[in-house]
Amino acid sequence: MKKKKAIGTMITIFAVLLGLLWLIPLVWLIGTAFSVPSFHMTLFPTTAFTLDNIKYVWNAVPFGTYYINTLILVVCTFVVQFVTSTMAAYALGVLDFKGSALVFAVIFMQIIIPNDVLITPNFMTLSELKMVNTKIGMMLPFYGSALAIFLLRQHFKSIPRALADAARIDGATTWQTIWRVYMPCAKPAYLSFAVISVSYHWNNYLWPLIVTNSPANRTLTVGLAIFAKSKEANMQWANVCAAAFIIIIPLLLAFFVAQKQFMSSFVSAGIKE
Amino acid sequence: MKTYTKKQRELKKNLVGWLLVAPSLAFMLCFTVWPIFRSIYLSLTKYRMGMAKPEWIGFENYINLFQSGLFWKVMGNTLYFALITIIPSMVVGLFLATIVNRKSRLTGFVRTAYFYPVIMPMIAIASIWMFIYMAKNGLWDQFLAALGRKPMNVLSSKKTVLPAMAVMYVWKEAGYLMVFFLSGIQSISEEVNEAARIDGAGSWTIFHRITLPLLAPTFLFVSTIALTNSFKLVDHVVIMTEGAPNNASTLLLYYIYQQGFTNFNYGVSSALTTVMLLLLMVVALPRFLSQDKKIHYN
Image (tube, rainbow over all chains, first blue to last red; front, side, top):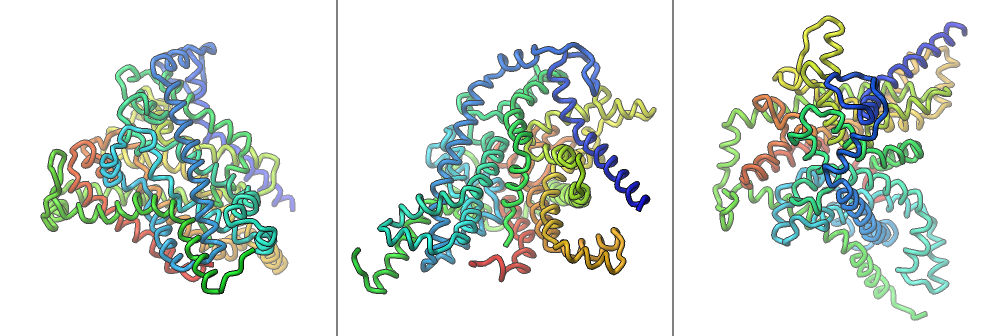
């Protein structure tokens, strides 16, 4: 028994040490973002605390605009996904209509082949629609979400039919049944999907990079990439850290507050039977 | 309430069903299905920026690609990078899951520490790690110097550039895979472990005789996700190397991006996209074959 306890303590110590190792990049990022720039890189800050890097970066790069653009992108994408996926999930989970197998085939196609790899043909479609360098162009490919449909459908199926039948007897239409009975019952599924969708679009880079070509429409990730690769950022790690800090902080704070919700969301998004 | 015949009700249900899926379906058809077929078609044409319309050339794009050394180099890089990222990140992910699964006051802290890189954008991570890997001044080379070794400048050497990126990638991805293993481990009933314990099995025996075999479906699932992710994420290449040195870090999706958006050669870019589609389908195949009964429409 004593030996077992000793092993347990050792594993705990090791787990914590490994956790500290995992934290090094974040510690360095935050420390550097708030210290006076120097040409000697150190793991922990050696100078006094300063906000100068953040101020400098905020003025040098239009991060305000990028913040608004990213927020618009994230919110609008989620709202549209919310509506379209709820409707589709109800049809596929509850109605069992003729020809639904075809819709499932399309859903599986998107699950196997994520939009991320279809950049060339999707960009051509976008330019034919004259939507290059627009916010809507950045969102359009994500309005039909196989993942959201799948997640919501699983949840809808677990809701007892009797509830929907009762609503119908009370005279509710299909539309009312969806939004007044099914939607409120599936809050956990919506929350999970919200976490996935928001963190995906907040962090997404390649597609927004391709679609946008002016500061008016760029997102935070695109802005950071341009700054990190610019001449003025060369060797200026304090500034790059400050810029990275500006971008990661909202999601990071949300994660520290609700880490369990984040993890369970990511698990539920991995589609299992 | 009006009464309908059975046939009318059936008809109405089908109509409502199609109307409800219509918006989602329309977007998925436009941005998933259509581009797939379009890529296949364009891969058989010559099509560059400035041309009025694509010109049919059969398999010429593919023949040119298969004869070019660069294409095979890129494919080699892509598969090599997948291999050196997914195996370590699965091993580390499983390992982290077993540590985190233990009940301890520190579990919350440890779990947070392992998982936070998952929600950070690769762009930010790559910008930061670029400085960590920077020659001489970077944290890594300073660490080596402190040990009395020579600086490596890992991102500029053909041999080390992909492994260096892989280390960063494993650091980002392991926490993600950890949560899947964790939920897999937690779904194994405690009774099974208890029974084994009563029969005198030690922790290690339980782990490799019970936990690992029961995690087989999780392994299959996690390896599919990990492979797909390693194919579709190239943000770090854009930030850190742009394929340098000498295309040693060019991955397939980055090559697609270069051909399509730097060289504006849509024909070749489409041929490469088609290769990517094939890769992704091969990756998804085992999961479908093993689950087809379960995952289908119920």
